[in-house]
Length: 221
Image (tube, rainbow, N blue to C red; front, side, top):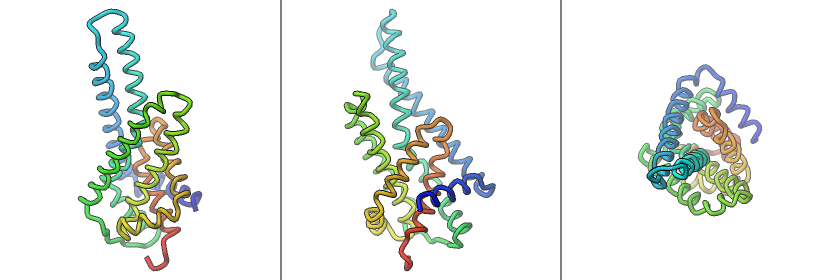
């Protein structure tokens, strides 16, 4: 099921019919990542800036590097929020084209936005609380990847599934398929840490979860 979902999502990614929304995903992601990176550079440099001298310059360079790494690895937290701008269109188009389904969403735009904002805030808080573990270096991959794979998998699955059955039912299905969804979240997290590739993850995340849900959904849904 996981391999099938991945291959079908890759096919959607390369399909001419999805070029427009893929460009939207790419541009919005690039803009948000750029703002995130530059604002991180600015605020951290301002916080540690000294009047003059080589020490000030050294600290500024260290701060810039630290801010860049922090922004880079925290960017995945914002991906579901980015995807929320066009997740409904992506999901509808995929379901219509690949499954012959015309969906009537059960979730309003405001509910979806509220859910994505709450997720982003929760994910940021969890990652900030884990910063001491990240800084140790050797604990970073042991904490960062499992945690954020779970967060991404959970949010993308519930975002796409709730359109059909609401968030409460989506939560139940996610709990029953948590390992597979965690693995899919890990794939999305890995992609989101790769330059350029990360800019298509909002599109790909919606696509892969749409296909996965269609494979596991109860027959009556």
